[in-house]
Structures are given as C-alpha cells and as structure tokens.
Length: 78
Image (cartoon, rainbow, N blue to C red; front, side):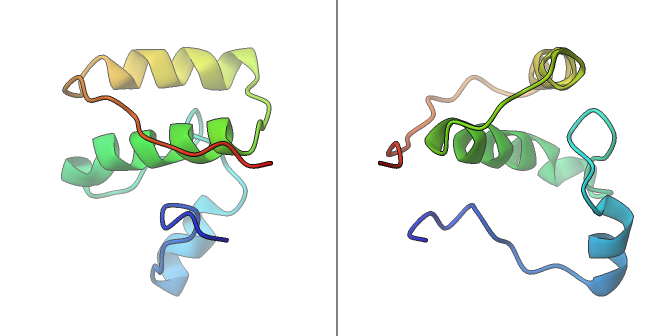
C-alpha cells in the first residue's frame, strides 16, 4: 500500500479503544489531531471506494465544519 495515511502507528490502548469504530463512534483523544484524522479517513475511504453510511457521513460533515478548508489530494486505487 503506497498510501501513507492508510496505517498509522498508535499505542495498544488507543488501538483497542478505536477497534472497528468509524468517525461517528470514535475520534482521537488529541483534539488537535482530529482534523488530520478526518482528512486521512476521507482520503482512504475515497481512494478505495469504501462505503459511508448516513450516520458516518453526517458525523464527517458536522466534524469537518470545525476544520480549515484544505484541498484533498489522493490517487484513486485501481
């Protein structure tokens, strides 16, 4: 995988607390990292054409409103 945002090293405690939760259910405890996390989440989902349910989409829109506008750069997977 050549997408550096696809996998990020974290502590075991953080990994367990996130488990398989999406952005509607879990956010990084470090508030200053949340916009980066949302950007990375969006890029990975878009790159791989992964689905987003309505609850997740609503959470992404609500949470992203607090983030600065930045263009997302990605390469779609083939």
